[in-house]
Image (tube, rainbow, N blue to C red; front, side):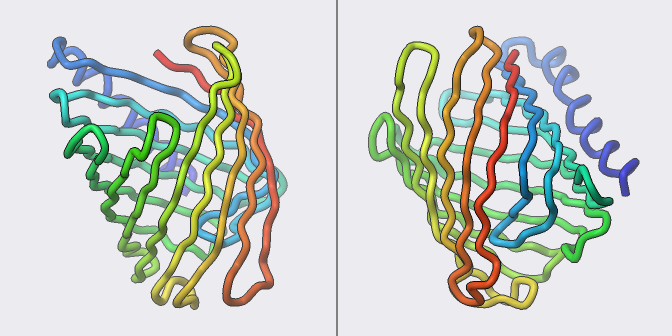
Length: 231
């Protein structure tokens, strides 16, 4: 799986320069992130212990109200054989200054995990309540699990200075036949502090939690650090 995951990530990245050459008048942005997490929790499931991961994402603004995001990531557990590789594409349409509608397609491939390889297709709606606060509802069909996942999430940010800001995210998820779970899944949250070292380089330490609502036997508190470079 490792060569396949690396290929997925490389393929998603290699597509970005080509689009820049073909459409020189389309605004493009690129961000690379590498980081460490003390535990890898995905959709309320504890998949691995400490992991290192690398992500690359590009954005192309097709017109004033329409943009496409393309990228991928690769994560590997430090002390075991778990790996995850993925590639994704998102399409986002601004209905107004307050609302954004989007659709996404992601393919995930795992090694040494009970999660199964497959496509994950979804849609989401974001309401920008204010400059610092937003609400998002999402619904996804995970074809690897052959099940549904949905969540409602709120995000808030506060600028501490010209170079630092605080971010808080929290939400609740529901599932239908998702790896043996149905109904309310988990309550989750994350607090992060981003400091801009330069206009294109930043560091973000964070702490997060996931509290299972049904089984109540897998609550997780974990943390990590992201190093981000934008182009």
